Amino acid sequence: MTKAAVMGAGSFGTAFAKVLCDAGTETVIWARRGAVAESINERHVNPDYLSEVVLPDGLRATDDHREALAGAGVVVLAVPSQTLRTNLAEWAGVIGPQATLLSLAKGVESGTLMRMSQVIGEVAGADANRIAVLSGPNLAKEIAQGQPTATVIACPDSARAIALQRACATGYFRPYTNTDVIGCEIGGAAKNVIALCCGMAVGIGLGENTLAAIITRGLAEMTRLGVALGANAKTLSGLAGVGDLVATCSSPLSRNRTFGERLGAGESLESAQAAANGQVAEGVKSCSSVRALAQSYGVEMPLTDAVHRVCHEGLTPQEALAQLLKRDMKPE
Ligand SMILES: NC(=O)C1=CN([C@@H]2O[C@H](COP(=O)(O)OP(=O)(O)OC[C@H]3O[C@@H](n4cnc5c(N)ncnc54)[C@H](O)[C@@H]3O)[C@@H](O)[C@H]2O)C=CC1
Ligand SMILES: O=C(CO)COP(=O)(O)O
Image 1 (cartoon, rainbow, N blue to C red):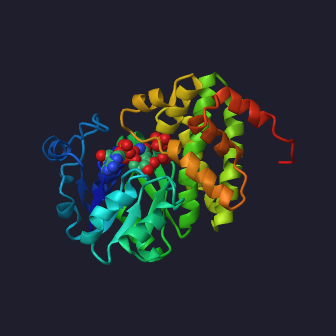
Image 2 (cartoon, rainbow, N blue to C red):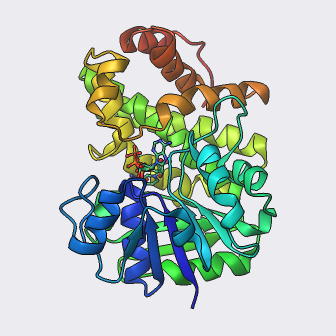
């Protein structure tokens, strides 16, 4: 049976490792800190993330990446998108030549404007057929509680996608397969930015009309970008697009929405960052890389542009909102 190595013991790495174990897949999780690995092995609890959840007895943990990766047929990359390149560079030499690389990260790399599957291909020297991405409405805490959840596993090689689907399907976790890696990745990266925007609206004190408008127009702009990059528009109207957008924009569990809410309520970027307690709100960096990627393809993304200006150019959320409403009238 295939062994899975989950590289990263943050919220989603921990939740997904539990899913794999519950699905009957032999799983080892790599944690940066030895104390976290020790706690998972001895007390079946990750003290830093989802600490209220009891993890399966069968989940093994280590802070030694060589030990985690030894013999792994599936390598799950569960680190933030802006550190994935550096992390993977350390691990690439010990990843098996046929192993499937599954990315959980939702972001676009700053500077290179590469999607995570592209970064993985470059750093690990892996063929695109070995690289898969998982994306969908997947709030880690709800998954860890065993709440019914659906997701998408995208890989150009359908057989690998099906093998991954089998490796993580449980009574509460239902993965669908897709070959549209670009669509899934753009959906995942772009919805974090739109969730920041929704959070800002909530922080300002606005209601459901505004949120619905942001979600719907957010979907329009992320679909424009996805299609320009070669995605299938249907992917963006599925779980990895609309599904994730709705979950993240609506849930107080979302780090991105919560971060935006703090900005909307008048907190500074630094103060919102401090309140995040080291947990990643990917949209804060990806708003700039998604915006730059869109600009390089001549795609208009007014909400993403507004979030970038608030996060990085000193505009207040109120000013950004006023500017959005002053845009030229147009047909839908
Ligand atoms: N938390 C969630 O509900 C979901 C998260 N994701 C995505 O999964 C990816 C990972 O997210 P989470 O596990 O939630 O993040 P997190 O902030 O909870 O954990 C990040 C993990 O990466 C590790 N790490 C390794 N090298 C690092 C470095 N150089 N700097 C910072 N952290 C480093 C940390 O120790 C930690 O274990 C993100 O791209 C996120 O968008 C996707 C779906 C759901
Ligand atoms: O990707 C997620 C849900 O699908 C998690 O969103 P946050 O990173 O905003 O918590």
